[in-house]
Length: 254
Ligand code: PGA
Image (cartoon, rainbow, N blue to C red; front, side, top):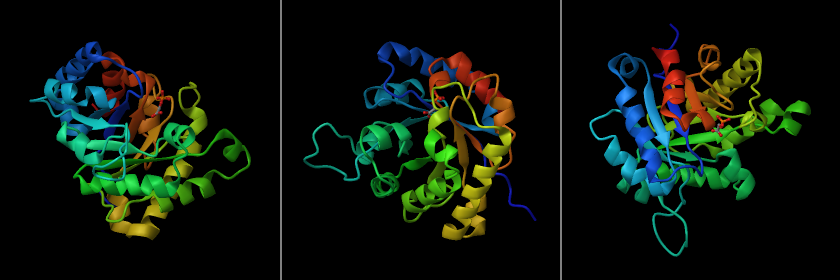
């Protein structure tokens, strides 16, 4: 018997955007997260650290989850400017993105760094969203599957299970560009990630772990992307900044 499809997760990533004024969008998303959607998908917005506490307060009474976009591997200490997973949890975060390609590129994060951060997330009781994805040069060189396999294998936290870990496949060249891979390319990479997870964690755990697609997900392409086999939700940058767009994407699960 085929494993039950994991409950989809529709996650927003505001990146370095938003001041407290923007919290009205969080309120609008929380208000728009109605019963039909609640039955079919989990909704999450990952915010700049400065907005997490406020957003958590705005979403009290809603099932909308709030998350962070990065965390330090350590719980506390002399790390000026950094924020720990424990601090995010204390502010009301329930998830944290780790290893986003912008962090891998801007901050030199390696798979080992990402794994340590994902393990910090689990230690703090957060769910880790571990991002992987190839660059344009890697795709053109035919290295996509090899790169993504290595990232998944080496970034996966010890103790990963379907409740505490989510994988997000985000081709770097599709982020913020309006470009998306073909459905066949998305299907190929997602199936391969599932295989890598099976080898690492066993078929049952791998079958229930969510694998999100991210990179230029918009209201007009969400339904097609979300319908691809082994795509268990989306990680959305630009289109998550406006409640109406984010909810229109989530409506793929209505
Ligand atoms: P985008 O970003 O939706 O703006 O392409 C996706 C991401 O970086 O998570």
